[in-house]
Image (cartoon, rainbow, N blue to C red; front, side):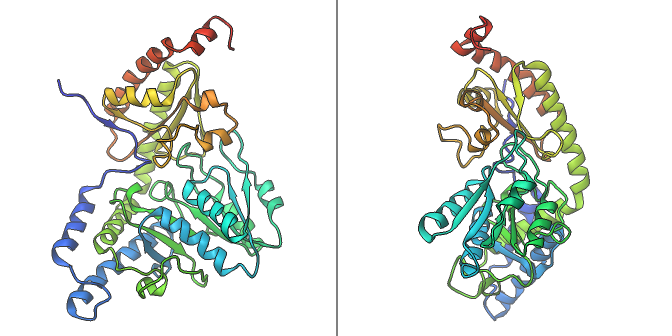
Length: 396
């Protein structure tokens, strides 16, 4: 009998929707011109690019002339942070971020510290992954030029109080950037209502292909270019436009906008079914992240007395794809920096599992995971000296 395949690693990357593929193929087949060219072939593709820009803007409550296409979320994060740092370095050299950011933010901040003399404050989080607004306020200095806090965490799903963070930044005349790669298409976002100055998003988290993303930059804000060359993207982001990718992310945003409410409702139901089922069937399990303020698509756990790598391999053998956290760090042996920031021990953090859902996830998929996962965890624990010691009362 053919092995059932269940994909629950959508926070790493989503499948591409058929409507998005069709939009891409239309551009690849019929619009091969360069948008920068003045001849008809070049001019024919321009409306496609601008339509996509409008679709991205509509999804986050922005204006189309505030959207700049990039090669993905990591580039957008790098551009927002480096571009702001270099543009405002005469005003100050202090940046505030958090300990649980994606490495696209953390490594960018570390680079600015190491090579350009910037100072960075890394905010703590509580055991649910939430920052303290009071600590944020107390961390602000006269030299603070940027606050960068992710909208929703990619490993545990916790959604930060973005609107309040934006209010604090606005009150102190500090720019506010949010990495919203996981949130866009899964959470209602209005950049103006939430006081967001810059926002990063990525196509392959919302059913578009890899290699395309966008950065929202509020009108009136000027940051330095990350990529120099031609005059594309209103002279702010050089490089010939990825027109097929732009068409794809535009279509993906259009679909997300049309279906957002139903998507959130359905994903929340599946997520809660998954979390409740795991907690009922597997003892010594911790749900990581905030149970209420979390992405509708993400369930994250730590199972005591097992290794996450062995768990992932065992799940894969029965056709289930999950993750121990971010795909960008899943090959690392060290425990997740996010889980460590929550205050978990190394032993508990090593037993992590992230299961993330999508519009393609079915009730049957969730039931299959709930059938197979408890058996795998029990088998792995039966081979664990730590679990044996626990049962003997030596390791409570």
